[in-house]
Image (cartoon, rainbow, N blue to C red; front, side, top):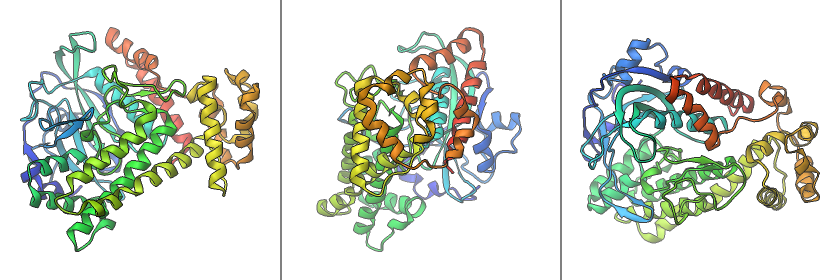
Length: 467
């Protein structure tokens, strides 16, 4: 654990000290043992967990008061200067076993100066949904924030998008950083150029040290290039995993390329470029097939915010790594999820992926089942013949996809011996499954379905063995 939280270097212009809500109840519903151990909090007793992550008593040698971060952002293409942490705050900064700086941030921890008439709360269902989504993304090898703790807080909340009154909770998530693109946008909007440079110094020093340069203009460009690469890698992973974020506003992108601020997310049941996660995204701005374009657009807004520090021409070079990082990530992660090695010929890999995803779209094959059936390529031909959708694999249209799968060498074929791949079907997280997990909690306070789903997700993580 760090004895001097680095965020204090810039807190005077990027955040406001706040107090957590005084909740009537504190019942620990979720605790991430694995990550707690990794950041030195594995020894906390259940009462201590509640004290720190329900009442938010400060961790030793850490922030004395939580900090609500200030930021602006483009929401569905429209700039909004009335944003900021309205129901969350930065609670603490810690270090993992690799000495990386990590943030413990909250959702549903009470009102802040940026609440904008909101109650500052989170529904328990919202907490459960994030537990599921973030764990599943981690199991699929996608760079993501981690759900750390969820505590039910005993309030009854009114919401328009779920039956009300509904139960309340406070979530703590672990991220490499909570600094958002919108943090830079706010400083540029307010013409706080010196603070903008200080924020660049902070981000480079603690998250992108290879971007350092004595010249501030070059440092800003280098930082943008590093963030562009990280963002491209993340979105390439989303597309291979069939993940639809739902709300790709610029305040929902952070500087380390991690999936966070889960809203109306979805995972694809079948390949559909026009699939939209958010019911209020009526124009399909953030539809599945548009996510790579939207990631590039968000980076352009970050580049615009850096114009007080560097020229437009130089910043344009900082955006260039995005497309390559996205393409390489998409190719690499698709192969990784299929358990096969790319060929030495990038053109042949591109043609294979085009055939694979075109067949997925045209056939209506289940996205999770297809990846599961063919993990290991030719090593899984017998498994695929026993699949619930085996008939799709005998159709002539599948022939070029089959040829591409069996032409590539399996990677770690021994993983097929894991219990996870011995089962008949993969873990998946389609919307009906999420509701099936939530319903017994809502109706009978029965958490067994959530526990079973998390166990299956953990089996997938262990089988893939991303480390």
